[in-house]
Length: 367
Image (cartoon, rainbow, N blue to C red; front, side):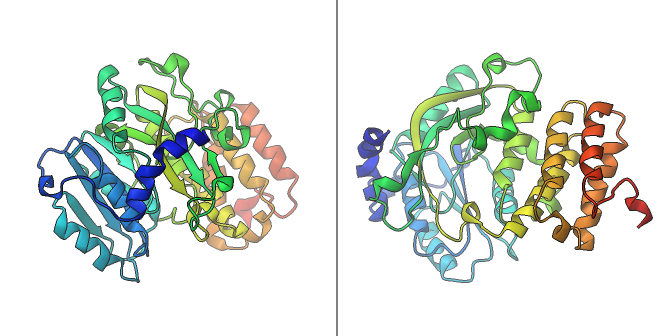
């Protein structure tokens, strides 16, 4: 893994230094781009140039770069306007208030005109100048809806040369990271389609996947815009990946290293507030229930998510909030009264609830 990273070091250094190796004179506005790169942005004036340069320096020019400025309160707006003035392929969408990553990324994806979508966080960089062309060629060759590739995750966002805090994010056997997506949880779509016989999802991230725009947009139409804004801090990738993979018909994982992702302090990934994470656990369960109209298909997954919520250490504190309590009980109401859920899974949740003295949801409607 380290040798692969060293080979990409030159390209990373070029982008970190803000060098443009592509001919700027070839940057022209395009009506029919092959690819759309979606980058949600919030207060990134000091480092957003790296992500943008890594896209501009790709060996394919038919790219639209969609920047969603999520109501930044620093000089991010000025910074990205400078890029737009030199590159007509850049499109800027300004949120009128801070809406969060899921909403921003989704609005960008819904406006995409390219055939394929790549999702970058505002501190990501592509690892080489041909990753986009390589991946879309793989998708085109066999008509795959989703192509997942390998990436490198850095836990040090300041010293990019600190190899000791870099790891390969290809975690196919990492049980903690993959727990939502095991076959026993019925995550995988049971439908006919190429490659689903060997279906294996390796990560919950969006930033190491190329997704057909038609598939991405079809998935997003299944959620209301209001729900996008509820996932402002965590689990936005989990929800998006869940829905997209349930819409897709074909998927392939390739061993190509394509992206460098930085885990910065203060980012959604590094969120340490346990209470806020508890809220996101509940919102995730609610969204999956809302998405799954026929609950038979995902009854194991939904049962698992509700069990996780009922097992939260801060659940008692969480349901002291009337809104959170109503959300939880509404989820339980749908689950326990659903014709599609078997008694086995209902009893599992009921028994868990009985063990919680402060959460007697069997009689909750009387409270």
